[in-house]
Amino acid sequence: MKRLHVHVSVENLADSMRFYTSLFDAEPTVSKPDYAKWMLDDPRVNFAISQRGSPAGLDHLGIQAESDDELRELEQRIQAAALPHLAQPDSDCCYAKSDKHWSLDPGGIPWEMFHTLDSIPTYGEYSQDTAASCCSPVRKLTSQTSKCC
Image (spheres, rainbow, N blue to C red):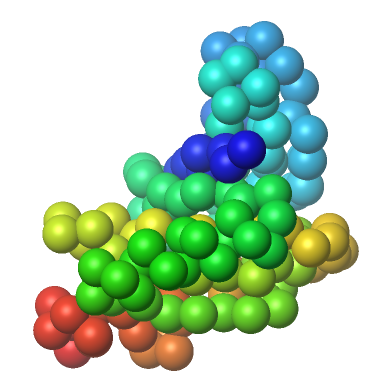
């Protein structure tokens, strides 16, 4: 069964962790100096926050697949609809090694479809979308849709 993924950039991680821990009535599943994640079953969501220099607010949405087959199904949906698509197999991001596929909704919100393979000790190479980094997933996708540089 797939799980909705929400990633929010925050200005103050400690304050945000207190808020979401109270809201969800659960401690984070993962807690790092710049990142926290709750894997909730009610509602079924992978909810992550990070303090990594991005503007505060919605960073991206996604769907976490529990198997390679579920991830392939999501990739096929994106390709069949001719949506913007970027594959990132075996990527290191958000303290996890994952196979990923990215797309953009019509309003420019990034969507990440992924299957987590393992945890890793670092945040990862695909951690931020900065203006100077045109090789990040969002920059590559926005250039495909002619909305960016």
